[in-house]
Length: 476
Image (tube, rainbow, N blue to C red; front, side, top):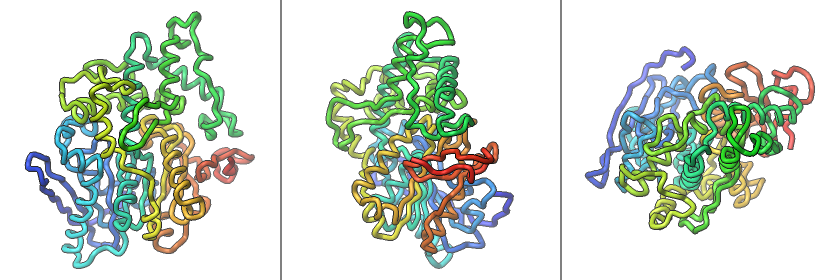
């Protein structure tokens, strides 16, 4: 916490389920001695199953700025209603219990945790907080949007980063990629992924006015992986892609649409940029280093393993089921179950009007090189909010920033390790009525800065110091 020593009381608690066979919700609260009369709830990640670190910073937060607890916040979070095994956030075994599924996927545990924490905070301090905030990334980003939609009066300010908001839609896309990449010869291994990444950078890096290994205008990158085709489409080595590998890359980068109706109303997942899925600095979050198989290798991509757990415990509820045998394009007897689960897992309908009316403020962030949750999906969410509320009303309570070169949670060695003091910006907006003005994001690895542009704008280099945000302008 930036070198600060904080004296606080830690409270651990358990909320008992209605279904006695369901696991408890385990939560933790930190109540500092120098309380600032504010509260901060943290979201989880993956399948959750562990209590978030109550001393952590917000997603993409600046390490040289105080974390919420060090600022005097009472901080809290929960495991969302189940306890993970050795595989941590990739443990989906709780999915065999209906109450545990609703606690996690529908977000029921969020309200239960929040209400219990508020009770304990009032009991500990003799008063409730004057302001309450929520911050989360990935699954936690989805949870942030859930609380904004389902309980619009629960939090005054929310930070949602790289949110997996349409969880079912992404799961179906991941299942499709498992089908495609498990075919013989279809998986592009580590060397091929590096080739693809370098080729995309070479083709598109300078189009924003500066060659810096960061593609700022990702939507304007028109690289075609067929340019890397091996002679006759055969796999002849690490300097080219076979026809089957090209098909896999294209499948990952294009929208996936399923030919049936599901109850949530979702119809597609928008796919991943070529840059993210091929970034070999973080293979675990992207394609992985080995092809999907049965049993699913731990060296396959995170999303492939996520699909495997979902099939075994949420869909079929058979831990021995071969997840490669479920085809999201033709689910057969599993269609009804998929449709039912979509009513739970894709409850985010982007109706934030009640949250806006309550005076809440929302900061939404995503990196354009995210390997695990497509930023295109967040683009879609933002557009849905605009369609419902209009541009003027949306800007009264919400800002969406897309960070070029940033990946999922600054994992590994991203091209741009995004750091922004979003909490201070949110505090000023909520407590003083001052929205963010020309924010600047810092690369935590190199120290270079860029303007944090509101989507759909992106930072275009003009002239001057290439490491300074003042040398860039937010462009369309």
